[in-house]
Image 1 (tube, rainbow, N blue to C red):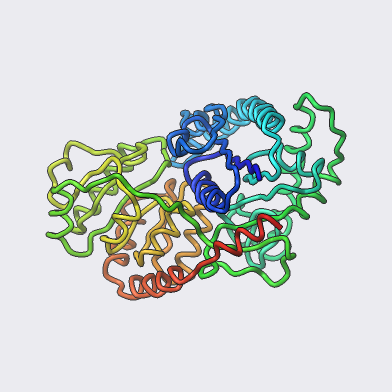
Image 2: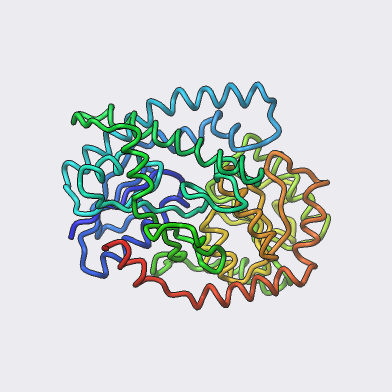
Length: 417
């Protein structure tokens, strides 16, 4: 059976699809991937791959994108950046919808698995007896969750306003899908009411550990929490001798990474964090992969720090006491799965939700957003992270539960139902 997996976003939006594709491939299905061009190296040569326009990622990494990622920017600068992103985003979305349409028309898959940033698959699903499945690595997106606003509004504003945020977000998503139906060569007449009905009827899988988030009792049966999944892969990577020595010679080492997140002033952000870590004498492995954190000359030879530009998280997390990161779904899951005390410095959208969850489950303190990062806000939290034993013990208990989860068969059956 031919199955297309299509996703738009940063690496955290891609990883669940790679894992699911690998599972389906082992079951004998023909797998096709389609992601933004920048993620092409993540796809093994054994799979057919259709690159999508790189412009979505380029928008995120643009100056306007960096401003919206966080930092202490003036309100007028953020409004201007938001307007520029909106204008450019309309064009990019139109281009991506056309590409999605062309790929699907060419390959004619039996089933499509997609994330909510892809606007055409639901249209295809309506026309093809609902044969698509939506995947989300974060909760609070379509179906209401008691005590939580929609992920785009991050927070808890009371039952009435919380429900309103879901309605507003769904209104926007339905409009985007309606606009997408007007931007494809094939003339399809879909009302907003029909799109909304299909959106709630669509099979939806949250790739989230049930240890962290259980299905609310009032959710319909077409919505399931089916676990965090990652690829089975051999990592062709060997640690340098200096890293091995650093880990052996230091206790309670933490790992610092902002993943694929960028920010308006990485030099200022890096100096603040490294200065505070140095003051508190916390040995740290620092990942500078995407430029959100950079290696500064004044700290280059500091014995408390070891800088890396690329490192497998599954390797380093097993060897560190705690992690400080941006709060992506995958990084959060992997840190907890390896029993790491966790401190999140959220940049955008769902990362605020994971930040609150870490605090609520007792695996770490609640971190400041990147825009509110200062020595005053971060220093006491770093002290807490490495000295409060309950964070580590709770993370280790969660790790034990997460590592006992095995939902691959349930995931497969739900996708193919």
